[in-house]
Length: 160
Image (cartoon, rainbow, N blue to C red):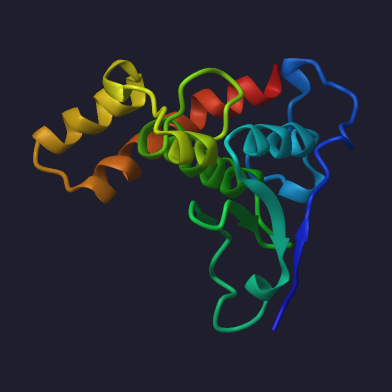
C-alpha cells in the first residue's frame, strides 16, 4: 500500500544553462525541470504525482504511469528523469489527440461538457499517429512510437 503525493508546480528552481542540464538518468525528484514538468502536466489537465506504491513488490519495476481518465501522471520515488518525460508525452498525446480542446487554456472537461472539441486533423501528433496506423501499427503501438520520438523534443523544451 502506498500514497500518491501531488507535486507543487510553483516550487520552480533556478533555471540552468542548456549545457548544464542533467542527464536523462538523473533521478526525477532531483531534476531541476521537475517543477516545469508539473506545470506542463497541469496544462494538459493532469496532476504530476509521486506514487509510493511503485516502490513495493510487485510494482517495483514500474517507473510511472499516466491515467487520462483520472488526470494523473505518477512517477515512482526512484524514477529517472527519462521516465517522467516519457509519462509526460502520454499526457501530451492524450490532451492533444484523444481529448483536444478548442482554444488555448481551455480544459478537456469543458470541451466534453460543451461539445467544443477542436478538429485534430491539423494536429501534427494526430497526423503522425494516423500515418503509423496506415502502415499497420495498432493505435497503442503507433502512440508508443510517437512517444519515443517525442521524448527528445520534449526534453529539449523542458530545458529552455
